[in-house]
Length: 238
Ligand SMILES: [Zn+2]
Ligand SMILES: [Zn+2]
Image 1 (cartoon, helix red, strand yellow):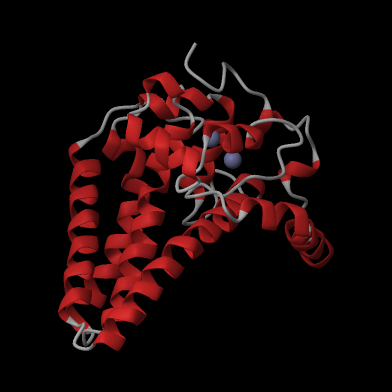
Image 2 (image 1 turned 60 degrees about the horizontal axis):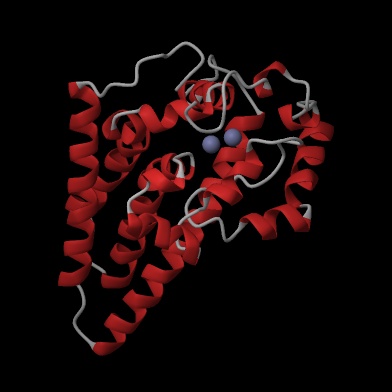
């Protein structure tokens, strides 16, 4: 997806990371279920699952805002993701042509690295394990939800269309605004429920001004004419 990366196919490495990530996520959910002993544990775990789903949307929004606006492909650690998201703004529809593992492996990798030690070295706790499994699951799969938001409705499976219409997954209509001027909002890509909060509260503009006044870094969204926003091709596949 990056400016320099034109490959849309999954490699064996991509598939292995996705397999490891999905196995770790399922392991967390199994560990969570095994840790539920009382009805109060079950209640807390349900609350944890709902909170994780809601907060994962906020996390994707803040992360997406960060990598859309700061750094470049040479930034330590985050460079490949920054490059990928800048490439996505130039050629949005290509995300729908990515193989599944090609699209989500870069999120499956850190999730696996975090989850494996948690799985093997921490005592089981139903609610905590449920929170971590669902939160990281939503974050890892957010790139698939993002891809569906770039797919024409007529080409989406009926269940995905229904989930978008219900607001369970971010919709094409909502995410489409992210790819239009002034390129400074609608960053969340799980359900999109936090987009209104982040955009209407002005909290991101406040953070941008704080970063600029303390460190001198201006975000890319302050300039609509920044080359990073110049789109080559359409939101959907032509
Ligand atoms: Zn973006
Ligand atoms: Zn997009």
